[in-house]
Length: 149
Image (cartoon, rainbow, N blue to C red; front, side):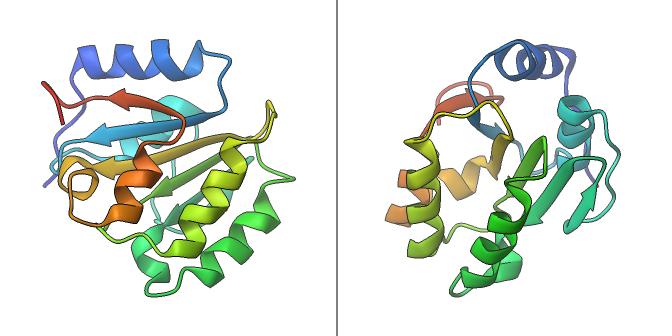
């Protein structure tokens, strides 16, 4: 069962993402909190599926594309030109090389749309997977977990 975001976590999301001009963000959440709520707060769109495109928002779950991640990259390339928001929920502690390379490429680009959010649980971010750690070291980190990761 997931728990709702605390008011301070909601405020942090709004301040550091919605009120910012940056385009690439990383959000760390507790395992018991809901990715659905984060998507709703950031985009205003309710999405009840890990794989969905709706009202300018595309949402994906990295773990659905393991082990290679190639289909994920193909899907991301399709939605980048047409979406306002892209949400990637890791849902795992492994990051395929091709996914890391794609996000490294995006990190070097200048753009205002789409807004890209990579969401990972604290345990996924602190895993032993080098590529996952590198993924979360790109862009700007918005840490919703109390204390350091």
